[in-house]
Length: 100
Image (tube, rainbow, N blue to C red):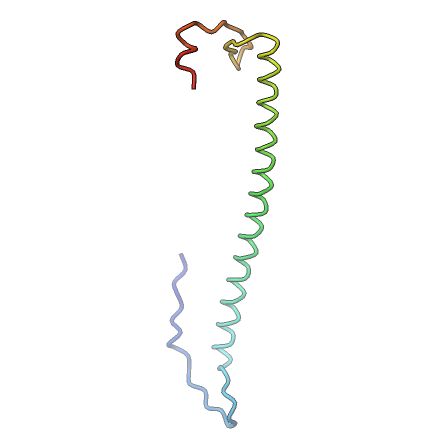
């Protein structure tokens, strides 16, 4: 992680007028800090927008999975299906009592 800058190293600026002004170094440091904060906020916003998109797509996929399960249950009844092989096995009586 970057070292936090020590802002006590800025020189004092004496202005001839009544208007106070930052030194060039102070202004540059302030501008750079603001730029980095704004850049991070934009990146966070982009990540959040992407997250919302993914959550929406995830919700659709879950609904599609539930629909597929319902179709298969209507066709084969209440059975166990091995997701790797497609093998169908009847549910044993003791398994129905422990189902979530």
